[in-house]
Length: 50
Image 1: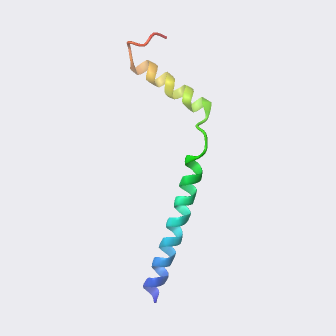
Image 2: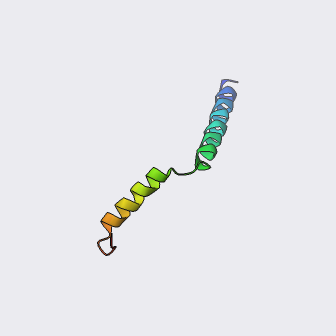
Image 3: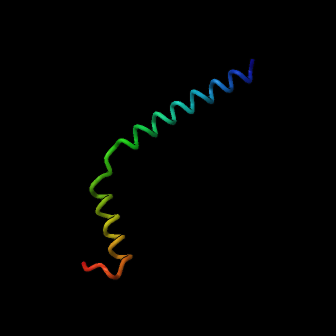
């Protein structure tokens, strides 16, 4: 009986984690973060004109 309760709790935690992950992946990436990534890419590629 105890093992069943543990498995049920683990499944519930797994469902909640998947729900939270799915919610986060649907959020847009902030423009400031995209700008920072572009800047890093430009600085790491010496062939790109700035």
